[in-house]
Amino acid sequence: MKLITAIVKPFKLDDVREALSEIGVSGVTVTEVKGFGRQKGHTELYRGAEYVVDFLPKAKVEVAVADQLVGQAIEVITKAANTGKIGDGKIFVANLEQVVRIRTGETGDEAL
Amino acid sequence: MKHLLNSFILFALLGFAGFVFAEPAVVVTPSINKGDTAWMIVATVLVILMVIPGLALFYGGMVRAKNMLSILMQVFVIFSMMAILWAIYGYSVAFTEGNPFIGGLSKLFLIGITPDSMAATFSKGAYIPEYIYVAFQLTFAAITPALIIGAFAERVKFSAILIFMFIWFTFAYLPMAHMVWYWAGPDAYTDAAAGTTAGATAGFLFQKGALDFAGGTVVHINAGIAGLIGCLIVGKRIGYKKESLAPHSVTMTMIGASLLWVGWFGFNVGSNLEANGLSGLVFINTLLASAAATLAWSGAEWIIRGKPSMLGGASGAIAGLVAITPACGWAGPMGSIVLGLVAGIACFVAVTSLKSLLGYDDSLDAFGVHGVGGIIGALGTAVVASPALGGTGVWDYVANGVAEYSMSTQLISQAWGVGVCLVWSGVVSFIAFKLIDMVIGLRVSEEAEREGLDISEHGETAYHM
Image 1 (cartoon, rainbow over the protein chains, first blue to last red):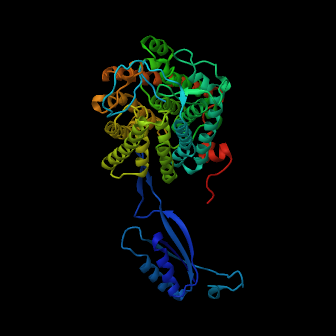
Image 2 (tube, helix red, strand yellow):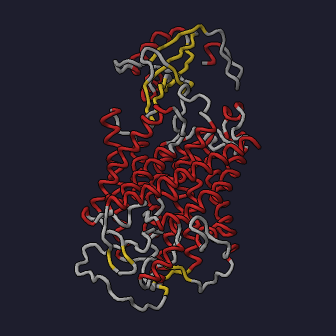
Image 3 (cartoon, each protein chain N blue to C red):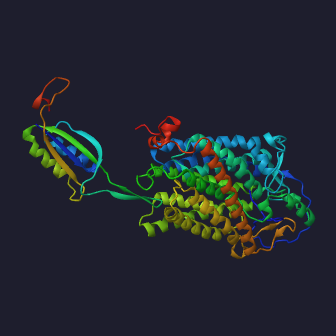
């Protein structure tokens, strides 16, 4: 099992969720986050006082998938979140040791 | 309220051909008009709207979220405190006869005022109920101290602010109001001799001929300079120019600015004390100057900084309103537009460049907008009041006609008003701030400032999200 963490543009969130649903992913966790990458921030000006905003708002999507779905999941996220412009985000993939469904106690792939 | 020349006041009636000059003194019976009374009640309510919630939201939106309630609470409590002080001694000290600098104590606790008491307007024989006059003037006394807090927002103790306001109201606001606005009323000017006698009882700056229709000196320069002294003594906010001190809600600021704009019609038009033709002129002048200043500030910002901001638009409107305040009863509509344009650009430069250049942290630009805009308005009044430039000139209550107008003489009178206000309010503020700093301290602790005044001073949080 793998844990896929995707940082995407907030307005692409719906597209990503739909794309994941279509390939059979049954649950995701979404967090509003801030950060920066190559896009860097922007400056805001209030009555002559200039503030550099380093951290831009992004959506963080976390999804746990079975090994055989990983490639497909990465592919659909990449496609759905792509605008071709700087700041589209990143996808991180990490090994997932265990998953437990709290209600039933099921573990592993059964719990996904 | 208006203010006028020694024995003249301005009066409008622009375009009213066939003025009769030097009419013999007319015998008039003092009377109260229900229309004037109704208008003054509405005008008073409009000025209250400017303070709560107008000014509170205008300022509140510009601070960080952790200090939002401190601003709302400071404005709210200052308003209430000034209302009570006004009734106890403020009205008497400002608006009864005394010497040229300060009034008397004959109306302490509003003693002697009844529903039948009358207060003079600017027309012979026309009066309004004195209770309404007391209330209308109360709102001016209440908004002026509240304007000052913008200069040192986000770092001063609530207790220190209240003590300062008590001292400043007593020793700066009341004398200024008396010096600029107190006079015996038009009915005292029956002939030249009576005019001279009555003129000698008026306030110092009234006698100097300084014009201030609705409070350019008494309200705006007065508060602006107090704010500047305050932010210099208090010092900069922690993180000034290092951390983001950006406004937490320009939306709130826009709502506040709009309420101020609407309420300002009560402030300026109400200062005419009557509902007549001159009120119409004041209304259109107020509207046009603020619109012009909004365009000027936004345009200047667009050209110089690349983008026209909402905060800039809102600030421009207020700058225009401030500048037209002293002039609104004497300017013509086109003069008001020019005054608004000049004020919009000048205040933009003051808050975006001058402040950085001089390095003081006037958090919400109380001096940059009210001080600078007030000075431009006070001096500009001498220009736009000129009949040659579409102004009304100044009314002579003895001759019952428009007096001869000299722009240079008037400019000197206006400079007297500005100079006395800057020095008087500046000195009182300096002493008061220093005194409070020595006794209880002005600033909150560094820890409290970082945590935010909402929690450290008021024990609550503006937003739970």
